Image 1 (cartoon, helix red, strand yellow):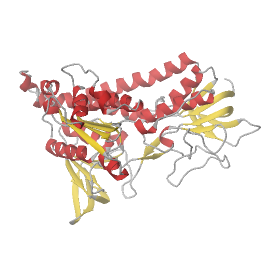
Image 2 (tube, rainbow, N blue to C red):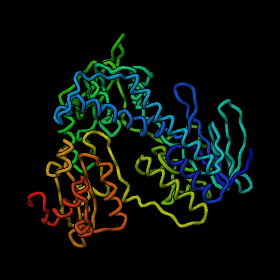
Image 3 (tube, one colour):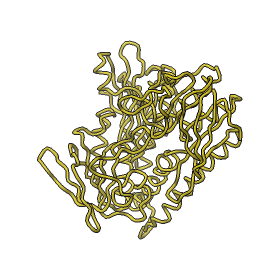
Image 4 (cartoon, rainbow, N blue to C red):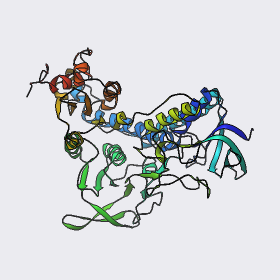
Length: 479
């Protein structure tokens, strides 16, 4: 193996592996280092997203939603299925198969692109004679010093642990552990009502668990438009998720077969007894053993690697991308940063438009948004207008038994620019792409009004929301 490369990428998650592949596509010699180790002792590329996050969670969400629909919805369609049973082991086997195919796909992509894939860990050392040095430790503990003109730090993030609740890998687990349950817990406590907590809580609730979600904040989904948050809270409560806001967990004590959680809320100290606890209070940048002393790379007060708008660190030709830097911890944000950095290294023009990064919560109903919330636009002082269209008025949604939720569009009054789009309803994560594309090209509300949408489709909701902004909606009364 060569010890010198044009580019070394540390991390092969959704930020690192695209950076490595694009750099190779740009005719650069590339090595990508990753040491993700699975519970069974095997190693895989793909980072948290493919191994213990985005992909496995969506597999479980799909399985659990089908089970829920078979129990509660199929009869409405005239489909009689009799007693519906669920096999957790088979569900987990299916999930694992999907994960394995995804991670093996990364290995194949590296081979096809000509990326040198290295299984182990990488640490950035001091530069030497204009070249950057990386200490590579393979999975067997053998060390080697590699050098490169450019180094890209893409080490991702790890779950945040409550000081009062240490993970034990069995009864008190992080998000990865919650994806590995071999049986449905009768009582599940979820700490944190963010994206991860709601998705995992939804999975096990659909499969029969009694789920209590404890959220320290007094507000629900504060990062979303508050009209969407209010609708989501109503729907999740209707589904049986017991969401307690302003509930600050103070301690946990383990019994022989259960866990007692103590928390305080507006009425004082409370406690609940559950069988399993999932701690989903967020993630923090993973910089453990990433940097040697004296590299010159700066870390901010929150643990993120400091970078400029183009993901450059304070050290020339050292870059950082993905969850380890500022901005939303989203796989697609990291992927775009990786591609942009690889192009910048190759001398090409490239940039990330951080104003139009979509976010999705894969619950049922799904929640998706891009751009500013109504609260943010109002605070900015810019005059705006709003168009809203409910899915109950969509023929396609009604045919799908999915009439819950709405599409909301926020536009500027003066020049009609679309400022934000917020969706709660069926396939919201797919529908938001149209809004992202529109905003990427600075489209106006009128542009969407004059774009022909196929009928009947869910995408007509965006069209009608755009029309509603000017009070000319066709399929729902204008207010």
